[in-house]
Image (cartoon, rainbow, N blue to C red):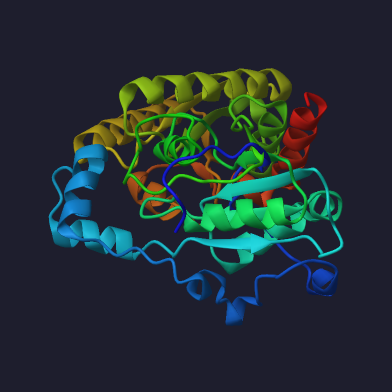
Length: 355
């Protein structure tokens, strides 16, 4: 693990990205690759597991609203379902540069992770580039590994790109804590990164036009008659209401753009607040069902599109939430679209231009 204090001084922080496809033919050109899907040992090899003790459990119960009414066994089970944190390094040993890129991603399994890695290949050929996977609830060693790899490759500035839809999230707050940008952690008080590189935290996806383009393309894939369709952009959502309001505003911006571009009868957005207490989530589900029922009553077809990073996330829960209703559901996550990694590359370029 790393030391507690100390702010990295020069690292280009590439926003955490969760999904990536890595072509096997490119393996010799870059650093250590994630193995093939049937031999996927990247996370396990790091040894960064999620082991809880009673004190840790009580801390999480106090900081994560969704854990407040859960038993120790339930919290342990929830943590046990999370893959270990780990780091992938994508640049060849010959790639050395004063700017490094660190992508912070939740991680989404072998295929998704390799898609992300494939998308950052152009960056990895130019700048030392690493992806640190995981929510960093229990530790920060994987992030320190990424920082160390980049500084060893000559990076004096690291651009960190957080691959999340909004900064209004617990994982973003935890990353901010780890890089010394805030005093309070979102989960456990894990060690903070150390090093000589300068850290630049890039913004999350928020209202970026490339994100709107992804959502618009995903809507079009299930649309047949825009004038008679209602677009519902549905997000995971943060637990806390003040953060949720900010994310809803971002979604509303995307919805307005999509309605104007596509000529849909209506476009609007909602979050489930999936990690909030059950009563909060249930109220959001009730709103979602009412929107779908109202559209049906008006003779319109609801198009539900995920404002979600991963394709393998809460989509199955959403199907259950809407059971018995008439709607179309685009299950693809944002990371399944080429613009996802285009956004990462654009974000790095935008931050590089400011240096």
